[in-house]
Image (cartoon, rainbow, N blue to C red; front, top):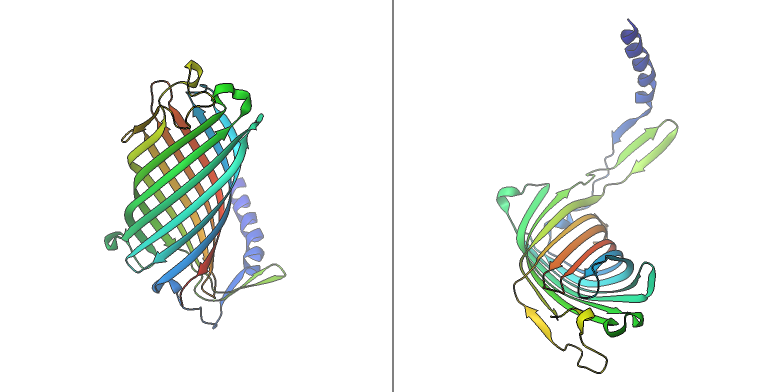
Length: 285
């Protein structure tokens, strides 16, 4: 009996609330779908990064820090393939050791082909590759003979991406209680890209700094070793894009990148968490 009363009360309360929320289709047509056209973009992307780094050549401790970054890029999107080139630079410091500065420089290129079998009108799936070259530079005079670190990391990834269209095709009127909202047609995408290393390489010191590495006055890359096929790297990119009526776009992305490079005394582990806001400027008509 009590359950029946509760159900009846819930229905009575919900009926007025549901009556106040109404969605009405508008006759205003949506603007043409620019995703069906060939597109070229110039990218400007400021970002905020969280870095976790452990260099066994220095210490088994994890160092965590923050970094500001900026990316300049260009992309070309065709119906069945797309490519993008990105140039990125960043600078920051580690927590609790503010004299320890970190700088990163990165060049990245990816190319994907559409997979029709796993694509539809709203879903676009692509497979391809991504090439990445990253340099980490670290400075801290308090570390003595280990006051400077310079690491060169390069990776060739196999990549997969799914992009889902979440457009609002036509204008809508929404009324909630006494407030009216007018929602215009909009084109939006939500995409997830996963990249797994097929070839991970590093060029860095082949010794433990604490056991007598390069001292001041020696060549910068003394006793560096090239490991052409070693370690593992994984990267993901989750992004929301809103396309504007003038052909430009805005994108908000969360990027995660983890890299492990082996060594006897000098194992290096780096993880980056990045929040990035991208301005997309249409470069063609």
